[in-house]
Length: 210
Image 1 (tube, rainbow, N blue to C red):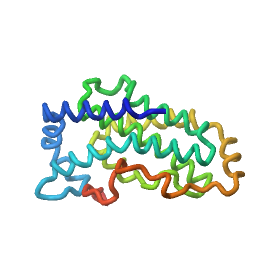
Image 2: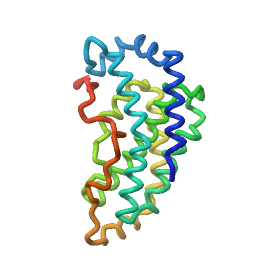
Image 3: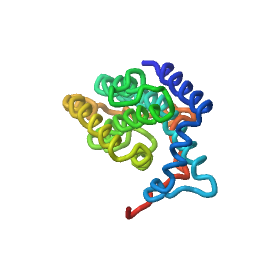
Image 4: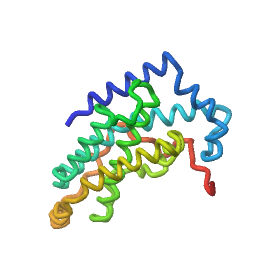
């Protein structure tokens, strides 16, 4: 399983954004709306939002590689593989409901689908094995992106993820095999990806009580 094409897709979207500034302009126009849901740093909220989006999208290849490594080590790769392939497909063959312009906005849509699907795998891993698969909780980051996408589109994408996950989460017998394995623990030094996950100290936060 390779993430090279995903990295190329990300690079192309960032290049396009550097030339057009289209996504930055859309964030600037939506700042009053976003401030109702998110705590944004001053005096450069748009810069912080752009950095967050770039980090969020750029973390997808590392997340896929990490889940691949852990699932192979813990011997449930056959179970995880369909999720991983689908997460890749969201980038390489985006669903028809997403814009096909190859820009940063489209990239964020695809990254959201991939991260939410991997979050489903992680939640299932915790439920069955009482430990996380990924070293970083993406729940808050995914909620932030939900607001960046807007409720209408984000809800559509959530429904797509739930539909996909419901079909991929049927093979419960695989987890019984994993539970029976003895002495197979992830080696911390082996499973950390290099600088690809969204940073835990990112500056964008949810505005609670909204």
